[in-house]
Image 1: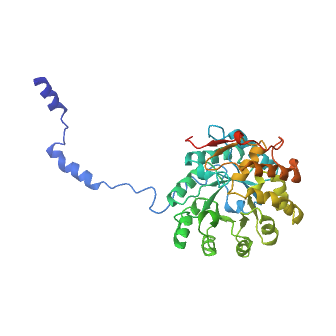
Image 2: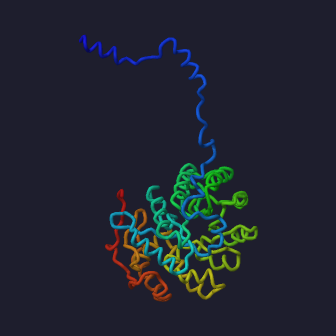
Image 3: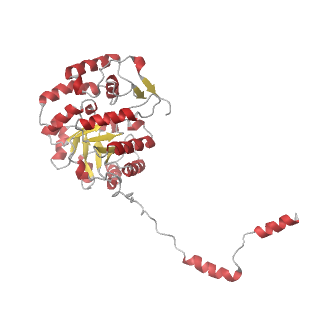
Length: 363
């Protein structure tokens, strides 16, 4: 015990000697905290002028065919990157100029943010020199949208796609503030689809945001009257409705389309956007486009790509394949348009219900 008490006395914290205390206090009194690296309510550019494939909003404004790319899955629910790469390569080979990664069609709403950013980075690394990569980093939470967009630009995406806050929604002033917080990070496309968000992005909002040099344009789903309302003011617009994109492009001033159908027919959609008015081709494609949107997208697209053998017949719930009658209808549509116009090389199949795998468990 005696030796133990000695050890305790020797290990006691040694405070400054009394004659040093005044000097110690003087030193402490002069200390000032370092200035914060980031000022409140502002964002670091995260080396935004050094990141891979850095581009400008002006570079995005000329794109005429952008594909909202599908995300394929393996039977265990993970991404099928082999099928994904093949699908992107088909888009590039047939003239698509950009892809939206992890959008509604790509089922970004069913991804974790880790998956989301990984897929954007993968697309940039593999295809960023051949096609513009637009990452869907939008959210109904401004905080999440900021964080995801920082990450997206850090891994090299060329532009961000941003939707307005959905479900909870917000005021017009809140909507403007939401977009104002993400626009400074890089080229941005605003996506207006009231059928999914429950709230229209009004022209008042877009005209306010148009003052930002980072606004590349608007993906507009309200209709061609709205498209023309913007294009008359010099705002770039991509049609978000495949069934209206021909008229939007050639009659209402749209730059092009962000398309679902081009997953299946990139060559014909390229022709529709690049080679002038073609009402005959547009009429030929309309039955297929109507078929694609008979149920909420991407249900029919996922079914069609599986029937074409381009992706495995794996669905992440809550999406399930179309019934067999609609699958047979797709086979007939392919025959009318011509199998050679579609992606993939396998014969189109109806597929049995048992062929589809539905993933609902954690992955």
